[in-house]
Length: 353
Image (cartoon, rainbow, N blue to C red):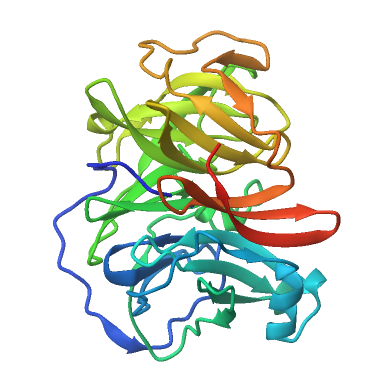
């Protein structure tokens, strides 16, 4: 996941009473996404349980990770967890902005016996498990999240991406509603998650409107006078949603501002500035890391007709970053990157392009 700009995302906000924080062991069944909130609070997205857990990590101090480089990181994780590297899947990588420490959402094992694990990487590169046991936490169940009985969708897509801003946790994923693709906002401290907003987009390369494909990753960015959600979808539309248009239980159509190529799945994205200009940096499964210019984001109507694979906002490929599987912003000049090259996986801090 991502450093979000100021956000007033009223996707599912209702009057609420804050949930009571308790100490114990949250019943986390899976982890698809992580995000950080204030004072080292770690949000753990659990699609199998259809819930998000807010865990008080106590991670409020740390040394700089600007020089971080951990080679053969999946081998090291496997050794720590008592399995081989082949039985390790890193689902998400997030930086705690308060400390610079890096947290990993890991699946240990495969199939029904797989177990979710959270790991912490400090500035010295040492890997430790952050045990989800005897911790202070609260939980927010997601109403009408996609479930395992919906054969057309994967249960893991109940939560695809998360981010925290302006006292609210934003959760992207799928629901059982008519517009399966949804965005949710959950006030923090947790209260009523409320109803999600169903979102519809025009996919130019496909030449049709779509409501079933989930947001794969998102960030926020001020476009003109409007604070907006900028969301990336599979195959790869880039879509903006003015936050003022997003209301609880509403069905909203976004503006498609780019088509960035078929046969591709976006993984992570965030906004950064360099040379006096703003960019979105987005990691993908098929097209590596894209440095997307924000110059054309203010377009009014966007893409409304069938296009070729590429249209709208332009990007350049960051050729020097190969094999990238996860990214997150570390600071104004560096990112944390999980990359696989020549059969080995490395977690490292790299300078922003």
